[in-house]
Length: 201
Image (cartoon, rainbow, N blue to C red; front, top):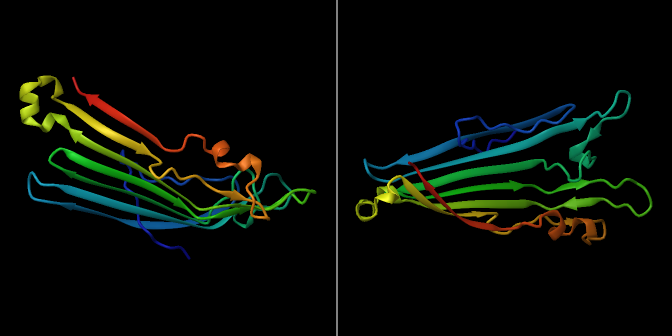
C-alpha cells in the first residue's frame, strides 16, 4: 500500500516526475494542493506537499545475476536509497511582496559493506534542505516608479539555498564518519545567499 502526503505544485505547469531506476521499481505517492485568495487587490497563498513511499526498488545489472535490493542496502551508486521522501512548496504574496519556500526531506538509508576486510555498512542520515526566496515587485510601488521610472517592471529578491546549512551525516558500523564521507567533502557548498535583480524592458 502507499501513503498519501500531498502533491507539490510544479513551477512551470509540469507534473512532478520521479526519477526512474533501471530494473524493477515501485513507489507510491499522492497529495493535495491548497491555496487561498483574498479580495481583489489582497493577498494570496499556496501550499503543496508530495510524499513518496518506495515499496520496491530492485535492479538487475546483468542477465543471470541476482537482483540488487537498494532499499535493503544494495547499492549501485555512492549513496543509499531512502524509503520515504517528502517535498513541499509554498508561498505568500501581497501588494507586491512575496515569500516562497521549498523544502525536501529524505529518510535515512543504508549501504551494505562489500564483505571485504576493512569494509563496513554505512548509514546515511536523514536530510532536510530548505530554500527560501523573499522578493518585492518594485514596479508596483507607484511612488518609487514616479521618482525613478527605471524601476518599472523591476523585481528585487533575496535568495537563500539550503537556508539551514543542512548536510547529510554518514557513519560506519562503529558510529564514526569515514574520511571520504566528511560533510565538507561531500557537500562543500553549504548555505548560499544571494541577491537577484530582474528588470523587464
